[in-house]
Amino acid sequence: MIKFEHFSFKYTAQADYTLRDINLTINDGEKVLIIGPSGCGKSTLLNCINGLVPFSYDGTIEGSLTVDGKETKDLSIFELSKIVGTVLQDSDAQFVGLTVAEDIAFALENDCIPTEELKRRVKEIAKLVNIESHLEHAPTDISGGQKQRVSLAGVMIDDVKVLLFDEPLANLDPETGKTAIELIDSIHKDTGVTEIIIEHRLEDVLWRDVDRIVLMGDGKIVLDTTPDELLSSDALIKHGIREPLYITALKYAGVEITPSMLPHSIDTITLTDEDIAKVKEWYLKTETEKEEEKEVLLQVRDIDFTYKNDRNGASVHHALDHISFDVMKGELLAIVGRNGAGKSTFSKALCGFERIDSGKFIFKGEDMAPLSIKERADRIGYVMQNPNQMISKVQIFDEVALGLRTRNVPEDEVERRVNDTLKICGLWEFRNWPVSALSYGQKKRVTIASILVLEPEMIILDEPTAGQDYYHYTEIMNFLEEINSRGVTIVLITHDMHLMLEYATRGIVFADSKVIKDSTSYDILTDRDVISRASLKETSLYNLALKCGLNDTKGFVEHFISFERRVRND
Image 1 (cartoon, helix red, strand yellow):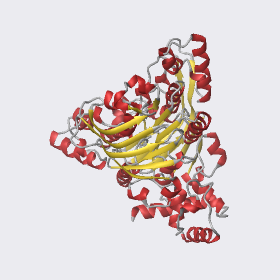
Image 2 (cartoon, rainbow, N blue to C red):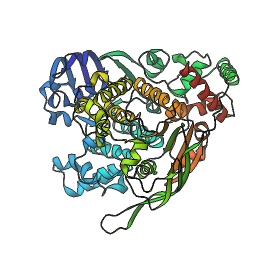
Image 3 (cartoon, rainbow, N blue to C red):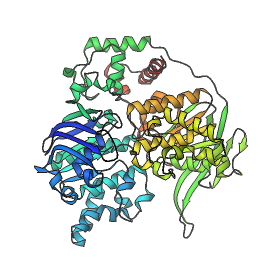
Image 4 (cartoon, rainbow, N blue to C red):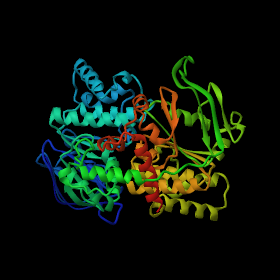
């Protein structure tokens, strides 16, 4: 179905090749996962398949690429669109309709499908991706996870032979991400369509089988193998890709991972009595660390907020239902829960973007109600989920420097602080680039840098690591840990359960606009009722403990976290 032969590509604006001598064959009906660090060429590879290269992105092509037996350079982008459908990482860049229904129907309208048939197929596909209750909504008014489902429906509704998924899990809560992987898998089984997935969340993708995994690095194919072979090698660690948590735990315990163990899933992996004994011995030797008590920085008291209809003021959505909790000075707190549970709304209300109906935010003993958005921003920095909603400058350096310059900081200090922050966020080499030349993940790093450079007392980051490879994920989190250790309070709104386990000292769980649990990460992720209500996902460590006959699943997860932090700090 797809064949690269000695294929290379170089963007017109760049001196070096992004793809170098690619030789790759993907057969009709295969399901292939492509992984690799940011900037390795994964998205460019996909854009060559769907025709965006060279029709939207000019450059030099060498070698051959055929799709469905046809040389892509001999096809128009329209002709390719009838063979290949793409679900983009940045859903906003894919919308064309004023409503969800119009957006899904776009391809059918272009094909002049009769109205009744068009409506039937739109409803059918909307039900399949669980978005049928939002058909009359504007795509811009729904959550990030819902946007991904609309994008998927818009592509699936056309009868294509190849489906490309670029970071399909980036903005989805764990349960919805699990459902998305199941949906992608069922589409593959039911239709026999060829599927190619790019995703950093390896363990989540492997919730369902893939035929092969292609590992890329520096524009080349490093490895093309089965999931079992890959997880039994050290290739993931060498190239900065996160291993599944259960694999990491087994390695900590001294268990050797081999392909015959079928390690691609916690459900399939087989452990010998000797392996189980090693896990138990490691678990019993692990010491946990006790957290020091901290003083209260922010008091959230009985906050209630309802989104109103602009025309008549009628209630349309009770987004925050009398929520209360404390944020401690110097802690690293995670706020988790399903899409639409109220997590982002809470942040917007705290920062003054939304006016609450009742309740109080008390920051260091001061009621924040009289404070303006600017006055709140001097105390609390906020990094939004969608980077496109924050960026206002053309050049990267100017974007990160904007907050300092509006505060009349001397230019020599602006330059020092901006350069220091860009280096930490892995963006210094791009400092003179236009923001438009960056990937979605790189744009997210720019917005994080633009807030970090202001050095607020508390920083709220909405999905800071979505779309980041493990190297940059670790780099950003290490930096956040560093400033957190100096007393800066960090609040992470995240769907990444790994992040909460590895870094957060405490978690707040939102469900149905309420706070349903305030506890440690290991307590939250071993509470099946909370996991179900908040659309979270049991960590694979929980299942590993059960597989090894350890009933104290909470203690096992706690021990892993403590051990992991010591390894990271060493």
